[in-house]
Amino acid sequence: MPALAFGWLVVLTIVPIALWHRVIGDIIASFHWSLSYATAELAPWLLLVAGVGFLVPVALSAGRDPESRLYPRARRAYFVWGIVLYLLGCVLVIEVVDVWAYAH
Image (cartoon, rainbow, N blue to C red; front, side, top):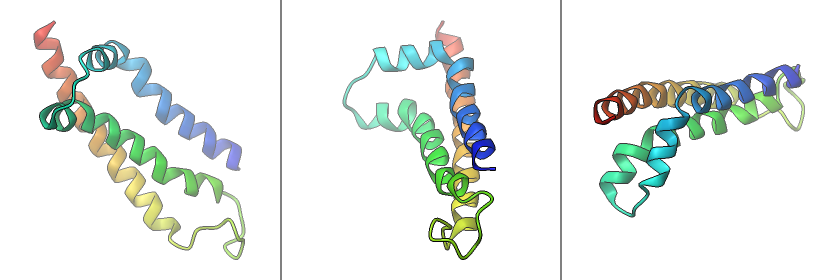
């Protein structure tokens, strides 16, 4: 069961990279320290990473007994935060890709 959960985490990580690798390459190539860069170009990708990060404890506890030491007490909260951050990141990534498409 945890292997299946970690498989889904890998899919959630690989799919955005596979779909939007050119956009990610352009964003990384234009890296500079500024607040507008961080909020407009990096924030969607960081939200995706944070969403996957919140889902890691959920994947670790998949199929375990709720009394287990590895079962997080706030498992539902981790799950909800992970899903919400990931979906918000996806929506914002789609917006960034749309703006990027106008420039290229």
